[in-house]
Image (cartoon, rainbow, N blue to C red; front, side, top):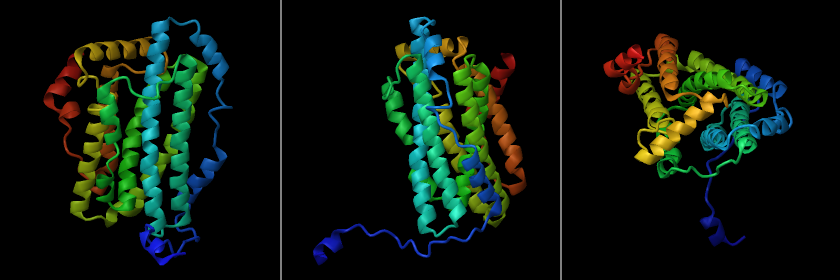
Length: 311
């Protein structure tokens, strides 16, 4: 090969040594569980039955359900580039095999959740590959901020992400309870089973590595979690307040219909209560590690608390 061509080749960091010896048996057990509990959205969910059920619903309800599950599909897909970056970090930081295996499982599972979500949307009516709202088109790509991720140590950053997954899992539990059709319920149940493993991974990382962090690093982790929560849940696709008036009314009605007809959706007020309760639980979980999460006024401010008490 010509030397000039070699000079133009992008140089990757040195991947060696490639560590094969297992270091963390508890993480490896999660990898084995992932193998045993793998599922196939195409084969393990009765899509034909859901299509038959959808045919009995009003057109507006079918459209509302398709939009809601399209939104879910976009969110699940958004986790895959995050996972890809973490896998690259794991390779070039020469991390143990079981850590790399878990990250690969995470990517595959999030893509599986994406598939289940877009198949629900398609069974109800039509999957939407692009958000209808310009605002959603703009804000969704901003959920993953690699500069924020790079600012955190690898294990600490992944633990912070699993705190966010813990909160998302509580929201998905409410959607599981809302779902009336077995196909939607099965999809939520299987996704939740994967997410429980992701949260367990985060607990392992906190137990193993948080004591090694400095006070400044712990403050930074809490701030990053709060930023991610506010950006994706409160100011992102679960919030309609930033939409133009007509689109806000239309979107709110669509979400109401999807929840009213038991299509695995949740009412916005219900979501805020779930987020508040889950945030309080997360604060309790990380209290032994002295990781402070800043106050989140939209959820924990006096006005927000008073409004929920009055409901």
